[in-house]
Image (cartoon, rainbow, N blue to C red):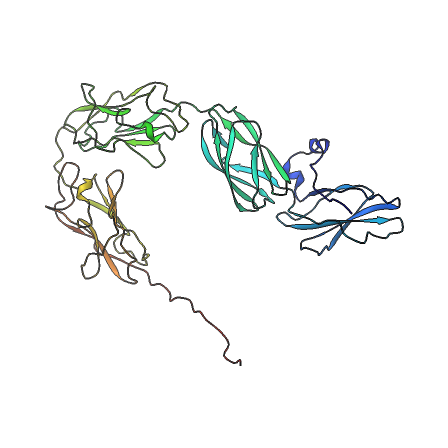
Length: 438
């Protein structure tokens, strides 16, 4: 018996299929005919372990067939034997074919992506093999990498070209043995609209805004960080002059949709300001498309007539006061009612103390102030002790935390009651063995 091999399914057969699910649990085979004149037919033997073929199908005197009703995600081992008119089978098996049933591609999440976008798709279905590759119909979609999760899931990193044609695309999964399955129209390329400004904070027309405000502008989609600069995202005063921004401003959020303007100093009391964003030649989305026109807040917002003289206050902690069974790996967070001066937030001013009042050592860089300046996260240098009580402490007064206007907290604040860590179970027993042996 010679050269048992996979073959592509005939086009005429493929046309008759309703969808990819019609191929569930199938393996298609072909082999070279045996030249003996008394060959009456062929039997296909298969099973789920090498050399053990517990199922057989007599396919008659043909040299191609499709096994159906196979279990998905199950590896089959297959051979073929010829038999003559007297019922005698060939003395030896054909070469063995090993593989999963033909892949079935059912869905993509997300099911759509914009021109110029790079994203990761979760392709689901069945009978995906380790080392499988993925193809998309048409042009303009580049597959950057495929990660095998399990036989039902592949994670696929793709880039959609800015000029890719819009519309539905077929997704094909190809196993290492070249068996393949196609899901028709499972992914759609959509047009990439120009980004827009969808919101501002303070809103247009807002009044009595704190002079320590850090204005934000929210975009309709993720933006290119390189385009979010102090030249492209500005705060203008009443004479349309740009307000000086602190180093690193504007700050772009993790999802790249919100830009925060950090003025270099408090705004003037009782003054009007406007947020302005450059369109052409300025901000652009992650695909490189610019805003169609400049944005200017109208009307602007007005700051409070009286400058801020009130120091910050603690509004909450996590873990909360009195919390129990807290993880020994906790990173406590303390929240304030206004933004703090980053230079005033240190391991000496925002700290965690133990039951004796001693400061818990903090990791390098701790505490970390949030982007809006209103919460600080403490990262202990090591896990906390079990079943022990700790309290968050914030130092006030001279040498303590300050708000952006330089106002200190009135007095030192200490969490009361504190929180208590969990009691961990003992480590697992190891080295168990019998002793009644020689």
